[in-house]
Amino acid sequence: MPFVLVEKADRIAWVTLNRPEKLNALNSEVLKELEQAFAELEHDAEVGVVVVTGAGEKAFVAGADIAELKSLDTASARVQALRGQAVFQRIESMPKPVIAAVNGFALGGGCELALACHIRIASENARFGLPEVSLGIIPGYGGTQRLPRLVGKGVALDLILSGEMTPAADALRMGLVSRVVPQADLRAAAEKLARTLLSRGPVALRSALAAVHEGLEMPQEQGLQYEAALFGLLAATQDMQEGMGAFLEKRAAQFKGL
Ligand code: COA
Image (cartoon, rainbow, N blue to C red):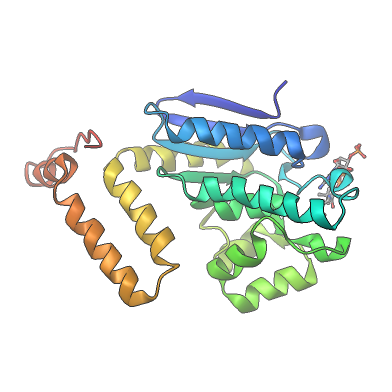
């Protein structure tokens, strides 16, 4: 069985981390398969939205594989961090929306994987945390950078320094996730959101992702210029004519992504 399952249905790709006996912990093979899956999905014209989730009812991903990490030395640990960062960077840079459907523990690398996704929905039993300091290390797959950007420095430092787990309800309050649903409803909720995104203009979605993702790394004045440039480019798309035409004609838009 592969460690990463990819199922496609109705323009939604479901990417399932599939190592439930180890709570879907990320070893080198899982990371490799995850990277391959996203490399293919990026260019798959049949896929408009990706949903990432974990196999089983207990864990999304319980972190990087601690058994593997223990044997690293200084040089290989740095390479390993860069490797994990590169995989998650690819996910964050996807030109189509990526939803994390967090179905249980999202710890360490699992929390960092969720942070690299564009939208996070959690089940009520999900628990988030960056417990690395309890292992004598720090988050190495982007957690020290993405968490403070998402929830602010104070809350991020609380989680990173305490290493404590946060229940889904608190994760919602602090902005770590944007929706929480009962576990039995998680898949349906992720699918409903994915369908909503699929009904939107694909070029607009791609541009919005770029404006937020790249714009946040710029000084605000430059980010505003970037936003205006993308806004201008969208005026040349068939999708804009279709979206506005459909509104004025009181019908649903049929976007072509052109
Ligand atoms: N790396 C490697 N193996 C892991 C793992 C990880 N990050 N997380 C869980 N596992 C393995 C356990 O070793 C166990 O394997 P075994 O059955 O062969 O002994 C199996 O997954 C089930 O986990 P277990 O600890 O028995 O489940 P639990 O319900 O008692 O506890 C957790 C669940 C999530 C609280 C606990 O597994 C945990 O703390 N995991 C590590 C979290 C972590 O520190 N992540 C950051 C890594 S950088």
